[in-house]
Length: 250
Image (cartoon, rainbow, N blue to C red; front, side, top):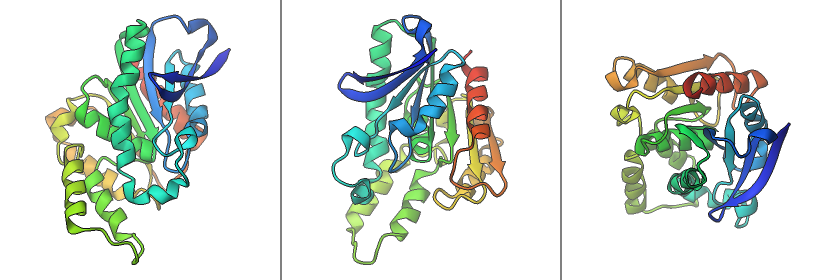
């Protein structure tokens, strides 16, 4: 039986999804991040399907979302990048919690996510070598270019200083796999993206695939571009994600 436990991990709200009889056993750990304007409960299907395969799955609540809400999520649009950056800073806290309890099998740690969660996955892999494998669903490995696109969509009555924009782009460059493909470290990293995605452009993912196809540190990068698919997860895509983690971490 799969259990869903709502808990605080060192003060961070998460859902832990796991087979009931495996709770006290060492298992591969997968941390899976939800998307913008969603909450951890929205990705329970992904957590459930991973748990069925013997993973300990942790679904964190992102800053400004769910039980961490501070007004409407959309009110924090200008602070969008603060959210994945906060998740990145919190990731080692989550890992250390389970490591202290001796519940991670052979340091097998995977990261995945949808949309904003997929962006978080890519950014995490750029700066955290503890991650052994990643699966990105409708995310982008190019936060600098995506940030520039988001800035161009701001309403005309929202003005940001040149200094603020430059500081944000400079900060994101450190986490940009398209600018630093060597940071992949030849780890398995799989992308699924719909070609008709109107929220996170698929072309940035495709460009990344072309850019890194001959890079020696990106030989375990794989991609599945679904023709005509939009910014939405199907059960088939979830199953594809699960099978990727099975092959990477079991």
